[in-house]
Each structure stands twice: as structure tokens, then as C-alpha cells.
Length: 602
Image (spheres, one colour):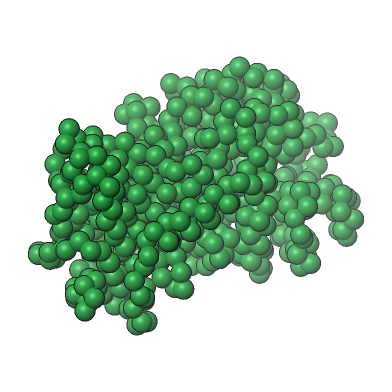
């Protein structure tokens, strides 16, 4: 059985990533890319669906940490007779992808067990196993090949490879599991010590660019490293998480594939990277964004594949029982075909921010932006599926209209500030029209707050963006009333839920955890209102949920007191980074993004 979500750490090579449990079992790994089929799927089933265990042959205490400024994980196992450290990390080279594990004896002697079950295609395919002349083990099925390199002898029985061995103080044993295409030559042996030194040097050099974040420097740096690990080294795309189908409610059906890149992450991700001095990554993310959206604006999607692929067809895996029996297990994401008007605002805001912060602007970019505004002018009054990707039918969501306003506003700002051509009078009229429309149709005088959608009487956490994107000032009575309604209706045990799932809005069974990014958004609103103590209180409350190595999932189940949802979640870590900077200095991302613009008197 898989461990608790928060019991996992992540290792990666900026092409894919693996989840390592406290017991030393790698229970999730997709090769060669984040969105490839998994060869270890025990996370969504059991060991028979693939895993690689490296741990004591018996009971032992364990502790773990990342080496500072890196994604190299050290797990120490201890008994009264000895102590052993397992060092886990990943590398890549010339079309190959390696998982490397070094076992080092620290004290006395310890009996160890390694068990390797390779199951390609999400646990469905048992590979053909061959022992090579040099002693390495080769696992092949179709285009996939894994080669295990180690001096330790593995016995193969019942379609699993098992090794029992002992490690004494000062002894080091290395293991390399390398993926490559089966139709290409087998890569040569790997010098684990040299690779470990190189990987450590690369991460250390990268993190030196970080200037710090005051008292939160360590946790912000860990979030930045996690964000870097979720970024493809070649395409610049940032995946939302490395997993699929980790449930938003244990035992429930809200299980989605998050191994893709969402447009709405763009502006907040840019803020997080640029505030932290990672300009190259911000530039790569912007370039990925421009490639992804290239084409007709009426074909804009809410998410894309790691390289900008558009076809993300959703299907279910019947042979995997799901994490703690949470079914179905899904691959692909049908939300990629939804209409979500907010993404126009997110894209325009991101591209405006990129120009404002000095990133090089593509010569074709402004033409694409103008086409987007022209298309948005035709569709902004239509219903859509909204930021939360509901499957209960399209509605007139407030947040979608606010972000349509953001799209037009940022187009105007871009033209005005950078001397670009555009029909500014028409755009200003459209901006004022959308603003008036929203304030007239979705502000409830009886509730003294904005509501989730036209004709509704409930709030949702996306309304926290009204001030954060500059639609209205944070101290506007309508914003203050909305924050109060969210505090009253959506905050449970100090954490913010997205919306009330028992209202049949999303077409799914009720129940999910508190969405961690939304709690950070509430903290950001408190910053804008000068309620610093409240902002710090909720920020520290969410920080307390980080696991022992500083990682967050998408949500938190306040009843079960467990992290839930896909893991580690980029949106949670991006929000953490930005809120830390909002608290650290007066001109943080929230202030910068929300600064006042000319608005109609509504």
C-alpha cells in the first residue's frame, strides 16, 4: 500500500521526476518525461504495479533531508546495530534518463533489501528480463528499456528482482537504473560518484542566484527548487504536478491528471521566478507560453502538454485501484477542451509583466495579443466553465468576467507604456463596459459581497483575485464585504476552500480538501489591507503543513489532517513564494499586480 501523500519526497532531473517514500520505495516514476507512462505505479495501487524499494531488511527508524540547495535526497535508516544512508537523485544525458541510488554505511552493520518491479505502461506491462555480459540487468518492453547497474547480485523470481545484502560502516554501494529507447544502443556504465558531484554542483550553482527571502529563505528556496524540478529543461514548460489521480478527497472521484502546463499559472509563476532572480527560467516560461498560444485565438486552450501539445485526451485506467481506492485513475485531462475566459486575462497579464520586468519581447507577440483581444471582445459575455474547471455545465462566472477585464486592461497598459499601436479608444470603452457589467450583475447588495456567478448567492475563493489583479482596490467596501463572506462561508479550521462543493455546481460528488493556494491568496489580501498579523497567521498556518522536506500537495483535508491532491503542486509552491515576498517587502507581487488604474465610477 502507498504511503501518505506527505510521506513522499521528490527527486528529478528537469525532464521527469520520481516520488520516494520514507521507507525508501520509489512508488511513482514516468519515463522519459513528466507526462509519459509510468514504470512505477505503486502510488496508485500496490507494489505489483511497479516500484523500487531500497531499505532495511526489517524494522528501522528513518529520517531524511535534501542536501542544501539541491534535489539530492539523503534518507538515514537506523537500528541499534547500525545506520545506513540512502542517497537518491536523478540525471539525464543524450536521450537517457537515470535514477541513481547510493547506499553508504554510517555505523555498524545493517541488512538491506532491494526489490525492483518494473511495470511499464502504468503497471500493465511486465518487461522481458535479460542479464547482460557485464552483469547488468536489462528490462525491455516495446520502445522502453531499463538497465540496472550495480555490484549487488539480484535474483529474479516471480517477475521481480530482489537483492539481500549487508552494508558496514564506511562501505558504499551504488545502483543505477537507466532508461533509454530499446531500439538505440545500450548506454555504457555510469560513474555514480562523478554524476553525484556534477548534479550537486549544478544545483548549487543554480541556487546561488537566490538572494534570500528573510526569515522564510529556506522554505522559499525549497519551493523554488521544486518549481525548477517541475520545469522541463528544454521546452521551459512548467507542469502543475508530477502525478495523476491523487485524490482531492480520499476515496473520492475528484482525481485528475496534473502532468501538464496550465496557462493560468503564467503570471504568478513569472512573479515567483523574477522576484527570486531566476530570469532565465522566467524567460523560458514566457517563450513556452508564446509557442503554446501561437495560432488562432479561438483555439486557445487552458492547458497544454510539456512541449505545447494540444491533444490531451482523457481516459481511465481500469487495472489500477487508485490511491487509497480513489477511482477512477485518469490519464489526460478533458478540461483541456473547456472554454475558460479567465485564461485571456492570465496570458495578457503574464505578457505585460514580462515586458514590464525587462524580458525580451518577441516581435510577433503584440500581433498575437491584439488578435486575442479582438476575439475576447466577441465572446466575453458568454458563459464558460470557469477557473475551477467544473463539469456541471457552463455559467456566467464572476472571476471569468474579471479576468476578461484584466485582459483588456493589460492590453491598454502595454500599448500606453511601450508605445505600441492599438485601438485604445475602443479598448478603453470595452474595459469600462466589462467593469460596469460585473459590478452591476454579480455584486449582491443583500450579501454585501460579490458572488460566484450571475444569479447565484454563494462565494468562491477566486473572488479574492478582484483586488489582487487591480479590478477594485482592496479597501473598496465591496471587496471588504467579499473577503468577510469568504471568511464566513469558505474558511474551515483556518484554511480556505475553493467553493461549496455540495451545491451541485461542478457536477461531481461533494467534498474536497482546502485549496492551499487560496489560503495564500487570502493572506495576500490581508497584506493589501494592512492586516499584517492576519496575513502572517494564515501564512504560517499553511507553512506548518509542509512535510519534513518542505513539500506541499494541492489541498489539505482538515478532517483527516492530511495532504490531498496531486503532489508536489506547483500552484501551492508558487503561491507560497509570492506570499512570502508580499510579507517581506512593501512592493511585493500583490502590490505590483494590483496597483490602481483608471476605473469607471461604479
